[in-house]
Image (tube, rainbow, N blue to C red; front, top):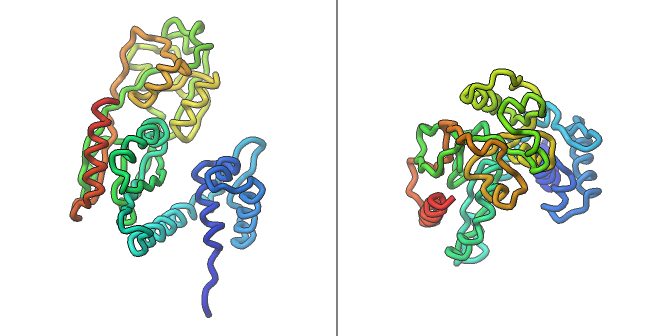
Length: 297
């Protein structure tokens, strides 16, 4: 007896909605209506006889079973996309490069610069697959390379150092008058990124601030969300150089303690690729372009 599987379209919708944690943004990415997104998700939930999302008033949250299901769905979709690209080239002059990338790095640094790569290498199509900033799965061969944040030393992978990261408090311009010295943080909400819980403690300790409870405040699961919350006046976040350079230049964010230098995290962004594989020309071109861009962050 043949086994039935969920609709591929429904799984694609689930992956996008889970990645963006928004039916509205998923609808925009997939060029569908929000009602169609909701209908596909509801149909998948009915098929699986399990809820996949908790639908709160203004937010979504994955259920435990959805969190367990998502990595397998994402891997299967990526493998299918990769196989299709490799075996059924739509044009002999086109080449696809599949890059898995930390979501905050993609949104805040890489994507705004991709136009220059497309102009320099129009024959290469880039496929970006977002990944957590905190944890990394094994780099399987459905990806050509990955941009990771950490201390390096991933066995079995080639590593290219891109940029070091410093952290420092940032806030909306409306907060600036409330923050004359670091001790003033005691009266303001802190914004935390889950998985980087030690960052505020490290920064406060480094500059001798002892009266601020580093555990309180707003907790979010992505750096880009923390930065957006700071722009909207929800509190004070820790920005990372050079990721927020544009936001500082436009004064959508400001640095309250300009006399205090940024604190090194001891971590960096790296481009990693398969060690035991002849490097494709597309990767070599992307590597060279990324290296040049990293020198002028």
